[in-house]
Image (cartoon, rainbow, N blue to C red):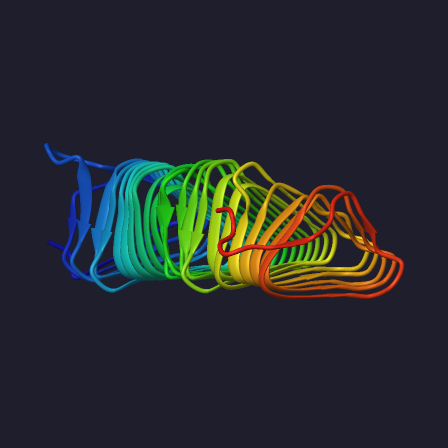
Length: 406
């Protein structure tokens, strides 16, 4: 064995085992000799630029200036460092730390503690890292297990992902798996089932069916292809859940659409329109525009500025309809307030007030107040007291009864 070997520039050399360090001149080619399919370097490898290894390579340390190509596996106990160049590995790459100035390509598996790439990183096999920092794009085609991902541009993971922290400046897309914390400046997408703790995205989020997690905060839009379990959703624009949703609370600046049912333990607050095909239930429901659901049930209150349309009714302790609002379907609540010039169907309540110019079909309550210029097209029934202002239009005379219809 030789303590140290130097390979001249622009030559092709066959090696087996190097007892010390290996220095490779520029534009050199290294092949393996003997029965081994690898060059084993007991010390460090130093490449002066644009070098090619046509075999497996193992060493304590690998340092290169300029481009480096290895047509086989690379196993390095300490660090791999490529300065002012790119690295291509047509096999597996294993090392403690990998630092490449330009781009890194690995045709099979990549395993290391830490990987830093200035440009792009692409791995066709599996990825197992503690952390990765990429200035441009990161693409992984196989299963990916990383604690911390920090990428300036884009991330694409085409198989199962297991990531603790995903921090991306542009866009990120994963197939399925678990990403505990997502922080993406542009858009984030999971094609399949995803487990998460926190998603914070500036633009748009798209999740696959049966995704489950904690908080989702999105500046633009959220779309879920299927069912979703969550703790909190806070979206500036639009939310679409094609299946059903179960969570704590939702706050949406624009519109909310749910293809199935929506069950919340706390509040639902939407600046514009709410459409839920089946039942929506929450502690409080508030919509600035329209609420359209099979059934709307709130433990404390329902407040809608525009219209409510339900098949089975709006049910709560307190229901308030804004000025010029419209309601299709019955209202059932302890206290009901119908705003000025609003139009509703049947009201069932304990304390009911119709403000000036409101119109209802039937009104049933313990205590009812009907202000001026209101119109009742059906019947008025009450058990305690009725107060009516002047200029109220009634289809039939109000009646005090012992009990109210259900």
